[in-house]
Length: 224
Image (cartoon, rainbow, N blue to C red; front, side, top):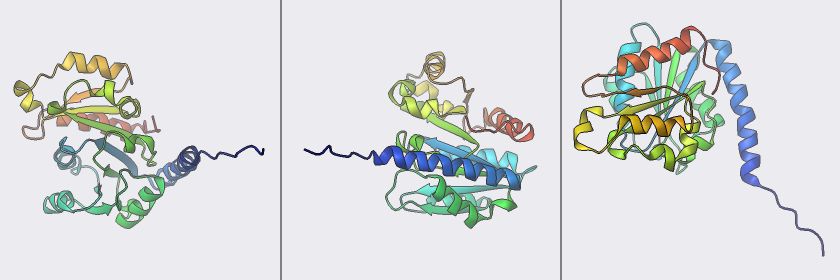
């Protein structure tokens, strides 16, 4: 009986994507554009946090936003209404972006016209972590209502993080969220800094932006 040949398509796809992602980073480096991938679950406050970050950053930097969703355009309208260049990406049912999707999106928005482009990836704590988008840095956002145990339940997402942001801290009194315990859980997966922010009050947004600006100014944005 002949041996059955088995091809692991997922490994092949991921390997090809990783190579394409590295190529995309080199292309972005050549035009001086920094690409930030923002990942979180739905309802974590991604859009609100990005909006407040851009409001601070756009004084000194040309910033564009890519909004990825399975469908809809609500988040993009929020950005455009605030005067922020943004385009909507529909993934056609896919729960993540990969490097080629990023390249198509960056071409559409005109990456060379921006110093920084922020990608709001599809809301999901699983799939987006598996695919390298070609971004220089990955920012993971977790909201207080989601609980402080998520780094234990979704380890890959936090292992891929270059920075972790806890949003909606203004709601802290209503939830059993322990900051110290969360930091301990994150430290099991990554040495990335943790920022506690509120898009509603603005608390912590400046510190998060300062971290990002440092990466841009010192070119400390090799993929982590």
